[in-house]
Length: 202
Image (cartoon, rainbow, N blue to C red):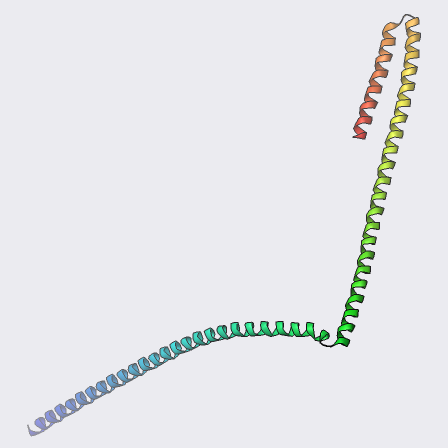
């Protein structure tokens, strides 16, 4: 019986120790989880704060660069204008350089006028030649059309004269109907040729 009591006490003691060890481990795990969660939260907050400060710094830097750019453009434009004025006035600061510059400008003006006159002359010559060619083409075309119309008119006149002579012979022979048909045919041919000529002229 003393052994049983001793075994029971030993079992209870072991069981108690195990429970205590389990609680301690659970407590340690909970602390560890809480620490890592706090660490993550802190890191996340630091990252957010850093990103926010970088964005703010970038915006400020961009605004500053834009303002600086506007200022530099104005200063640069003023300096370029000053340089242009200085370069324009520089040749006229002494009598010798002023005379030299004036001679240069006179020579350039004379050269430019000569170039322009030659250019205008070439342009005028080109226009005249083109007009002459066009007039020549038109004259040739009109002469050809007149020749053709004249030839057709002569041919039609010969046809009519032949038809009239033939019709006169038919009338003398008593064949009036045949004479009328010949004259009508000749008149139709002349009318058709005249219509063709008018169409070709238009």
